Length: 296
Image (cartoon, rainbow, N blue to C red; front, side, top):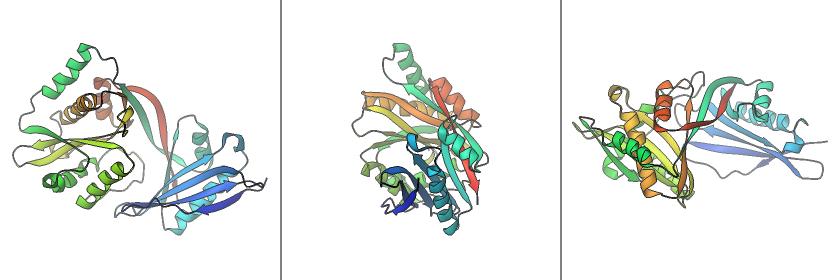
């Protein structure tokens, strides 16, 4: 069977990345699979591309995925990238495909879910007690959607809390955040119809944000929400702020979106601190994913 690869016009372009796309089709023009390559453009990540390859189950082992992969890797090289990353669930066809295609495993992620329905009084009290526990010198605040103007600068500065997030051997680079990027990220969530809630810890001595936790919920307030990240600046760690932030995020989710069924999170296996927090708050592992990398 001949496989034809057609480049597609991909409108997904943001201030921090753009995406290339290809369609694989057979002799009769039927679609067999697709590939998407995201090219990051912000300083600190201009070396990186992220790949997603999808092949119809009945067309696997017929070089459809290989042809798509070859095309995407050639595009990454042409764009001057040194690393291509891709993710697959452990044990899945994608896992085996990436391993057989020269990618190496650089990070293992544990995905977990917190069920929100049918909580008894003890579970409610547990979360409330964590939220209400005093943290001298700090206070919590929260907002929906875009950060308030008076907090925008300090919120952008606080994003460096994620700079040392465990990424193991991933050539991820350093994400540079400024007010423009913070506002653009919130707008991207709104544009697709989802709801963003951010909880922040504030240093009462100077009013600066020293930690945050972001949660995105479907626009109809139903189904599962997704944690986008929880981080605390290195100089403010050791005070239980990460657990405090995430507990408040859970409390707000249940209060503001009573029809939510659960909250999803993913954490690097090497991030033992956040995994302990997740365990304590009641998140249960659902599956493991592997981050793969191809060095160009």
